[in-house]
Image (cartoon, rainbow, N blue to C red):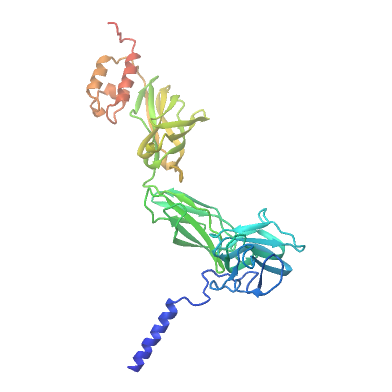
Length: 452
């Protein structure tokens, strides 16, 4: 029984050790810097003298050096560290409960400017122990912390670092939406042994860790996503000495399926000299509001007459890339007119000028959502339409043909006569555009006399 009681007491003691934070624990490892264990002066100015304190250089966030407010109660608003030999600094760590200023002096007691300033303020948010890179600054004979607030500030840890293995470089992060995924890419960082990838559904966080990448990797594909949802990412480089500065925030929206840019037409055949239309259409789109694309056509078969924006779309660039290729930039006109599923971008009007089969081809394209993601379409996802120009005249149509077509309005075009199918195509249902096309053919028929 006694042995059991002793065993239970031992277990209880071990649980206490595991549960209760032990004295001296630091969430950030501040060691490896110039100030490790050094004594710091607490004064009313940048002058050296008085007692030395090492509570802010002991790698222990539970100890602190309390600074008074500026010109308040004893006026101890400066922490001062002199150096007998010049030092070089490329990064800073400060753990404090409020904002604090950092400054450096040269051999002659003059301020050394950093980022164009004599004093650099570290915000309360930044004073959380993170590594703050600065331009490499040499010739430092004295470093100070200065409290310019009217209220006290507690300094828990303070250290300075040269490029001695710490991660101090900044990195640029980009994100792009893809099918069922988001692709991340960032710059490699010197001294980093890995990178932590964090994600949020809200701009600015809070973020949660989703992965860690090895030092050789500067890309990551997030597959655990919901299509149509915008995600926000940051990446933080690290090594055994701690974390470096995190990247910018980058965002992207995964796509539900592969978006395609297609060229569509109700007609597979047109008569020589016939005027006809085709459309540039996005398919499988999600929340798309802008497009930049090239369209190439067979100039031996077709002459481009004009390009017009579809309903609720704006055509903001119509440029000539070559004598058979145009580049177009379009955008939706309002938040209610983004393309989801299928949407027409522009209408092309062509004239058939040469017999035979020819292609109208979307050769490249880029699309964007409402401000977070751009996606470059692959060549395979840019479609084409083949149309055959056949001989014959458009002079055999009269009002009776229009009456027949009106009777079959919205019906399947396969029900039409071969003559009408040659003019209007055989796919889809009869629509207004077909009635307009037939009307133009009637007006072009010199044998149709309105007065008889």
